[in-house]
Each structure stands twice: as C-alpha cells, then as structure tokens.
Length: 150
Image (cartoon, rainbow, N blue to C red; front, side, top):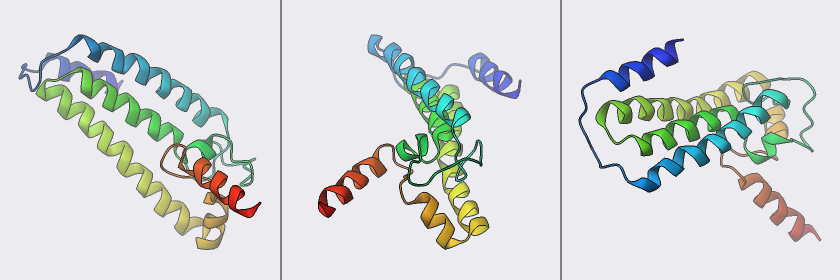
C-alpha cells in the first residue's frame, strides 16, 4: 500500500524533465520486469540462508538461484527500479526509483554483513563460496576453477 502511495505521489508531483522520452525506452521496463519477475520467483521458491527467503534446505554445493545471484529478490527490486528510472526522465520519478535502487543495493551489503556476523566467518564462507552478489559471476568463477582443476 505504501509503495502504491509513493509511486502515485511521484506521478502527481510537478513535472520537471531531466531527459526526453524516446521510443526505445518503453522496451527497458518490459524486459526488466521479465527479468525481475523471474528473479523474484527464484527468491521466493528456493532456499537461501544468505538472503531474503527460505532458510532451510540449502545445499552450498548446489546453490540453485543463489548460484546465479546471492540476493535474487533484491536484484529483482534493483532491476525493477532502474528500468523504471530509465523510462521516466522526470525529477520526481528519478528520485523515487533512484532511492529504491540505492536501498536495494545497500540492503545487499547489509545482509551480507549481518549473515557473516550471525553465521560466523567460516560457515558464511562455506555457504557463500558458490554464490556472488554480481549475477553470473559465481558461475563464471566456478567454471574457471573447474577448468583449472582438470
């Protein structure tokens, strides 16, 4: 409910254009929302003790969605906010979606620090070894590790 109020307030704020709208910009949230929806489903259906979502049933050797990105729900929110920020080039929307992007990015770092402190450094390293905050980075590193071990 609060989210709807914030977005409604941004839509009804005085219009101060920062950049003109181009036709291609309509594709950005269409693609972004598809990516964000997939990430949100992963976050809500797969166990991940390092982020928001289910804590039980996580296998660090087969991390599932966490192997793609450690914080899929926060990345979904980040993709959502940035894609809408690019579409709406007025000051109120840039401020609104920019703050959502900053909150999502900052929350990732906060969750990592909190999890590391709660689990202990050794357990956190074990659980996080095949995950990354950067999408696909852990898969690329895992492939590089596996390729060098052969």
